[in-house]
Length: 387
Image 1: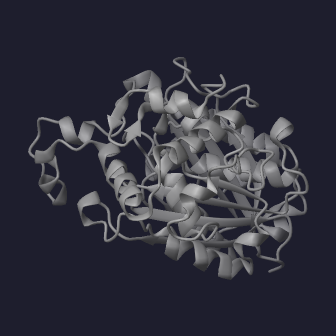
Image 2: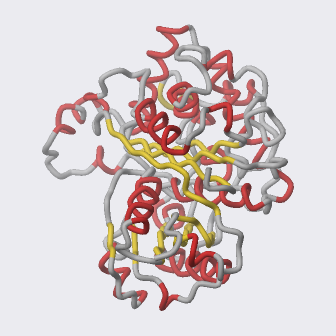
């Protein structure tokens, strides 16, 4: 059967941050076409499809029909914005086990053009009767951001973390975005700017919150054996793991610990690495507190020491832990589910194709997504070598 080590051989981005001429399906299509062109894979080669439909028109089975893909493997799992890290774990296992040969992971969203800045409010403002666990949160009028504010306030109370330290995340992401010509916001940002922006949910200010954009992405995976005949140097999936602690914020066991404390070490163990071996990070930055918690839970800072860790521009593309080198969800793009962009930028870095933000001699990259309200965590270790 040859070498069935799972690899990423194609990546594609649609246009962002605002593209009113493209609907969600068009974002899928543009990203897929670019990934096919990038890799040399033919659409007829694809026998595995993984995607989640945000609009009821791009769910996995509908997309299989639209794209004309006759699959041996299909997955439409939902886990929030980190679902694409889940998909890499699932696709890697399917490839290793021989269930399929060439897998497409795809995402497309016109959230900004279609709906504007409404992320996280629709579930809480609908006139419909709310059932399930969310009925216990709705009476308090808590939008999505409030769950993250609870985590931030608890971390501040327990460990002395400050708003200034959280603001450093937004400042560093903006420094990275300044080098990305596609990023939504590129103007310089200071800690004072973040603190002066209006309060959204205490202690989180507007500039502690991700942007809302349009955008899409596609990732193609196949075996190392098949990758030898394709255009790009393959990037190996060295380890992937997923975990969940809750879904609704009222059920989060500890506001200062996420499921990345489980998925991160598991992925690192599979890959045979430690945090010290990681050359660059792609962390889900839905809010500044998300980055701080992931840094701690993945082992880059001890629990409670994330604030001081952030004090000195560590996360910029030229810092000692380059993170979100495309500018992240805080400054570049966040179409509602950002996990696929973490994978794509990681691959660009490992290929040496990241341009002005290229991390010198990058060998190992980690993408860690967050879904729900700090609920589901997927961690993927990618490398230029198998081990």
